[in-house]
Length: 230
Image 1 (tube, rainbow, N blue to C red):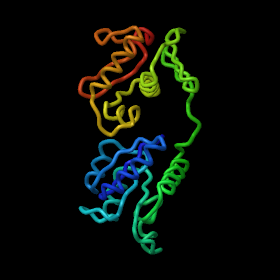
Image 2: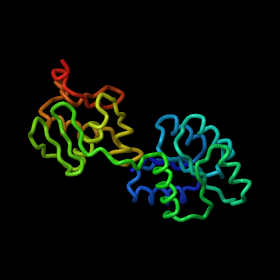
Image 3: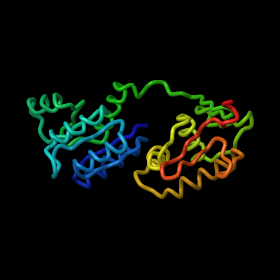
Image 4: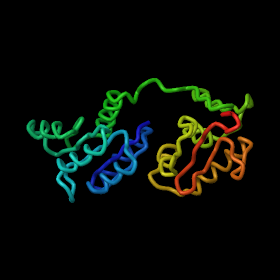
């Protein structure tokens, strides 16, 4: 799964691309203008960007240069022109690949997969995560605490695994919605409820946390209990 940002002003095309890539297990965000897309990149850099060149607010080449100035994430440009000189100019301006309109969902998905392989995103995944007495077996989707198997729902396991893979790092609620729930927008209360359920199963409370820590106004962090760090 990769985080994909689609910058496309046509709502029908944008919706179709997002639906197809989401179906292929990618976490997709969208923007309808170049400036909105640049804001999205600045706020939460994606793994791959699909950039339409026919945007209403900025020239596509200019938008590409601005995006390239703030992220090294691969950019696929979507253009209605297939002249060789135009393609060469785009690649020289920082594009990593291109698709010529109209294109199929399968074509775009293949281009995204190829860029991810080139960027090293297809490396063998970590299947075993340990944080102090917490152990997660991602292949078997099992979680143990101090040798005791935890009874987790699918969403609880996904949330715990995502946080445990980033011990000591505060993860924003928006990132959790995008990566775990695969939604661009949602209710923060959903995350708070699932964190509360996880705390109960980990034998802790919000007042006396051990593994799960809420950072007010920022997000959630999973870290080893302090009594194990002495």
